[in-house]
Figure 1 (spheres, chains in turn brown, green):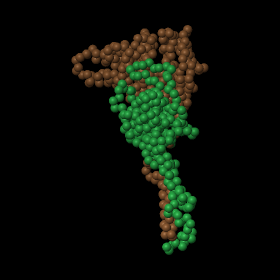
Figure 2: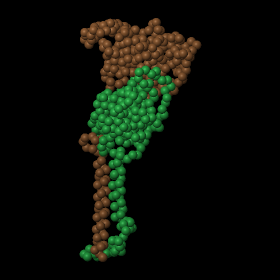
Figure 3: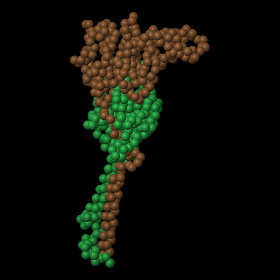
Length: 307
Length: 250
């Protein structure tokens, strides 16, 4: 509630008495209010997963996708209450997915406009999303053209060691139900449009993926490396079905144990243990050589004297 | 003259000619002295070699862990949007961090039999963990290097001096660069190393640099902590005016 009120107030402060484009401001205002009232998409997966990177305390990730078989759109991302977009993806066609953006934890608004529409026009669809530190999200426009909605998916950032995770998004309107298999494993069984499976654990490797729906099918290879997380998106194409492979995240195939032994102490304060034995040998060698040389000279001198 | 009787008594024969003898005749005439002299010189030579090896100076290759994996073309590419399509990056071959004067080729690292991360054989080069994503690909890429040798600073001696915003340049086998921006520098006790956070999956292209730090334990001859530098890839620009020159192919 406070956020909802805050947005216009902040906007007023910034744009105060500006006479130009009052209708434009009103449109933005409407968009912001709309964003606050629109429902969040369902959050897939449990929110309890531990953040993968403690380094980015205060940072989460978001990417946007257009997975509804409609015309191209522009996707705007706003920090909640700020009318200036922090990111715009223009002319995103059906099936288009942006890269993840790292962003400070907080509330954000995603707005969709027809491709090329001015930023001042009201967005046709918007939703707000709370980005939590260390978590990743995909905000996707999904559904039939007459039933378009924004869905926020919670993306996983942890895998069982040595395994991969895969989920399937069913975004084919022509085939309302699809089944997706990788090798002998079934990734999605009769999955309805528009929906998404939870992540499943899979063995890493090169997999032949088959997607079938009604009379159409698609098959191709995907490579799953251990420690990686993927989303397969089933789309309509001119020739039937099509599957795209998105890398949600990737880490080490095998997690090394413990710390890393990357120091021998040569610059550590305190007793440096290392060079002393070597220096002792060096000194010993010098001594012995010197002694031998002196002895040699002395004996030569003696023989000279003896003559 | 005073010493003559004794000297002539023991060394009369050879002594007569010693003055004009060429040096190699020392071996036959004074074998004991020659052996001692040779021993001393050898000891010194061994010492010098030993010290150099410890310091990691000689250019002997620090045994690569595995053969370089070949570039795998992505089977399915991401639809291109505003940002460039992220293709599979070529293996990393060199690293440069101008802020702390690092300029090194990269060797390849695997995992030891004990399950720990292998470290470069030479303290003067850094290495990429081949089990981690390649720098520039989506995921958390790992590069490790020594803070020091037995004698002095190693390649990552000044790693802890990095600050958020500093740039890291990785040259790939195909001559391209991946550029990273430091986001954080952390020190962790080795006993409590956050392996999941350091090696775990991330959704963007990140690079983590690891070295030692903290207190040196003379009993176990190792540092008690690790320093980890976190960095995120900077979207490549059409032109990079301040790009430093990179070391020659290693």
